[in-house]
Length: 80
Image 1: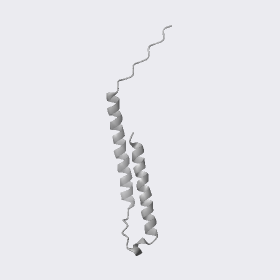
Image 2 (image 1 turned 30 degrees about the vertical axis):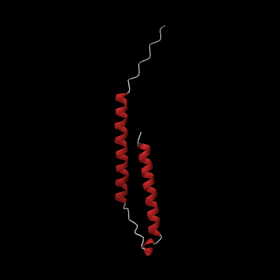
Image 3 (image 1 turned 135 degrees about the horizontal axis):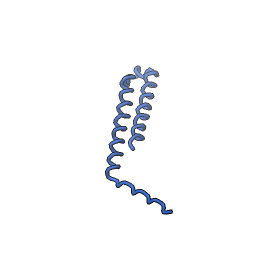
């Protein structure tokens, strides 16, 4: 249920990281604009954390939904 939101957050993070890397490549330091550096370990940590949180949240939500919904009634056997 929440995995699509997690993937949207990850794609947004990757987009921001690409923009930051492009600014580093264009010598943005000369115009004294502070641009943070996001390392590989931090990037992987953020991605893994977002995936873990959204996976656990989705599992908890699906279990809670399964408990509150009544079980479907079995179909009657056909009479022959």
